[in-house]
Amino acid sequence: MAGKPVRPVNAIDQTRRMLSLVTYLKERPGARVEDVARAFGITEDELVSDLDVLPMCGTSFRGGDLLDIDTDGERIWWHNSAALAEEAAEPLRLAADEATALLVAARAVATLPGLRESDRQALLRATAKVETAAGEMAGASSRLSVTFESEGGVFADVDRAISERRRLWIRYYSPARDEVTEREIDPIRLVSVGHTYVEAWCRRSEARRTFRLDRVAEIRILDEPSAPPEMELRDLSEALVQPAAEDPEVVVEVGPGGRWVAEYYPHDSADELPDGGLRITLRTPDPTSLRRLALRLGRDGRIVSPPELADSARQAAHEALTAYDGIEAVGTAGGAETAEAGGPRGVRAVRPVPDGPDGGLE
Image (cartoon, rainbow, N blue to C red; front, side, top):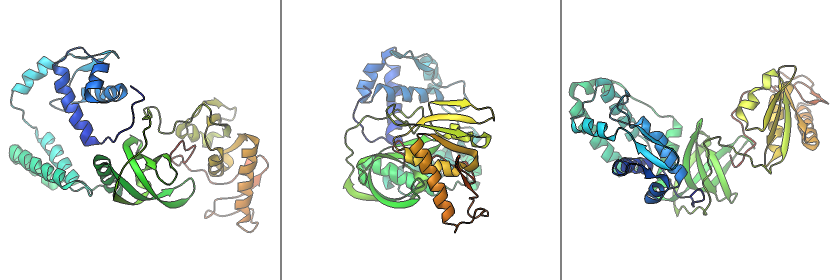
């Protein structure tokens, strides 16, 4: 089932599916994983991902009455369905903190730009019912508010485009190239790995690309239908960037101040060096994208191989120095000091979110 064609997925669709899944599993103890996945039209990996979330759901977030669901990879078992059914027969009561958290979250979501009006109205009606049921306990929630950052509006537009299967136009900043480009993309799914990303088919590059939402400068939902080509969904549970085994190998040596590279970049190995640094071996489909990393590392690291990439990084450092009219030492505005034969040096090291190896990450 891992090779099933891609299809749009959003949070609302997944929530509806999981609610139906609870009822389905209650009526079918020991159901086979493959049968359940087939019944819901999803892959077995997607089903297992849902099953990882369900044990965190229940009649209260305090624990003790959560869904006790697990799988051995072949069958699915729900161990406390009878106990929860008895609890569900009794009227549920919201505690003050539960009512406050629920109402604040509902009001915040209702303000998101790009939210479908029908969904907004349904949410507002549900909020009003909760306020009535909570009575005096709802008073505290009226004194609290949540403001979403700009990424929230982008998220809402992307989620809406996925739900309505429409194409998006975006203006996007790419740190790897230090430029803003305009693109039309067919969104596939939203993923969260540290930051929130949209995986999409990019009409500009005619390839699958992953865009970070906080780098979207402008976004519009287009009238054109979204029609990404059929492709396998990648397993992103390990990392967003997943270089292939056939990608070229690059070796980077970093000092103690550059050890962060091993934290941010997927790599094959990271061997300790006598000075407290690391010798890191990684793979990337575009080795030239690592020149920027070499310049950021400065005296904290250098590219060892391939030799042509190391030479290219040194040349880039010399060109940067030339831009300062031959001055060998530059103040904090430029951050560059010298360039030596051993590799680019003196470019102030920072801890960025990696721009490469991209593996489809824009």
